[in-house]
Amino acid sequence: MTDRPNRPETLVRRMALREGVSRAVVTPIQPSVVYASPSIRTLHDQYEGKAHGYTYAREGHPNADVLARKIDMLEGAEGGLVLGSGMAAVSATILGILGQGDHILGGNQLYGRSLRLMHQDLARFGIATSVADPTDVEAMRAALRPETKMILVEVVSNPTLRVADMEGIVALAKEAGVILAVDNTFTTPVAYKPLEAGADITIHSITKLLAGHSDVTLGYVAARDPGQMKKIYDFAVTVGMTPAPQECWLAERGLYTFPLRFEKAQSNAATLADWLADHPKVKRVLYPGRADHPDHAQAAKLMGGAFGNMVSFELEDATEAAADRMVQAAPDLPFAPTLGDVGTTLSHPASSSHRGLTPEGRAALGISDGFFRISVGIEPVELLIADFETGLAAV
Ligand SMILES: Cc1ncc(COP(=O)(O)O)c(C=O)c1O
Image 1 (cartoon, helix red, strand yellow):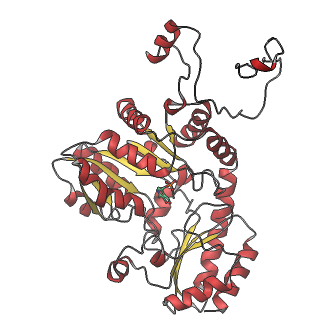
Image 2 (cartoon, helix red, strand yellow):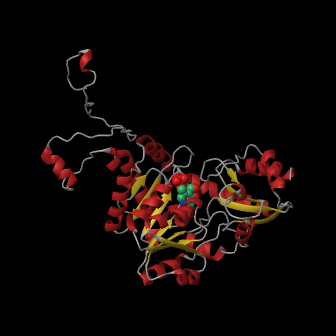
Image 3 (spheres, helix red, strand yellow):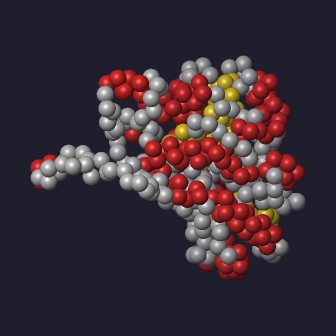
């Protein structure tokens, strides 16, 4: 502590801890909302980018920056930004860059809220939207308009795990002079690095695999072009998409084990997918690592053997009653609409992420009432198989 008279009324005066000769190994949590500058001249320098120093946490703080720099390393990015949620990252990307009269083309199986943003919110800002199938680059090309300014796709779709024709879409975006933004949440930078592959912007819901413990909600975005990054940053700061320092710290801690977790979860996913495919009560299994997946060759080429931790399957008895019996018989498989947790979670798209679609709309995507999506975790795979055995026995 600095030397101050030891009087109770001075309690509120701010004190700085003296630096010693040793340093903490773990990143400190810095909850300060404000930062004091030593002079007006220095503050000018900070705002003009001539001196580095924080001013106000909504505009940036150390815990967000440490986390962003770590994800930058994984993504091969520079100057990425951590925001309060994955949807904050998606929204800041679109609303920071696009404006009145622009058009955005999305993948037709984007995350539900991203689709909602496209279909229900962007029109109010004068931004036109449409969607097309990203596994079919000619369908994407046909959906481009003269005023298209951005394409937004996910590499692996939810919940049918279709793999986008990323090489075709990167080439199409370049040819058309359109900004290509990729939501890399499902794939993660282990399986795919959008910026290295030629995309302009990469986005994450850190909430999922990167943080990995279902205890923080955060997002990340990095643009290759500093001008685009500045627009995203300014929009996010203005509308207040600030991440909390404590959450950034927790996510940083989770991130250290991400590569290990992802490796184990993928190996479990491959084993579980094969086991489910042989089960008499299972009609079909979707896992990009299996040779019977419609996009297996594309996944193998794009994702370098990292096929992810998501597995979907459909019951032979594709009714909600049968699906519900399975859920109730296997309480150790949390029935929770998220993904990327250390533990396996199960989701039923017809009653959660895709409940807003008509049964016909779901059928067109191949999602029946007996369709499940599994986010495979890192528990011993025998335990998982035993849980599914119990669940399926009740169907
Ligand atoms: C692919 C994808 N993108 C974005 C999001 C949104 O992330 P968040 O929940 O952190 O806002 C999700 C959430 O499930 C997602 O799966």
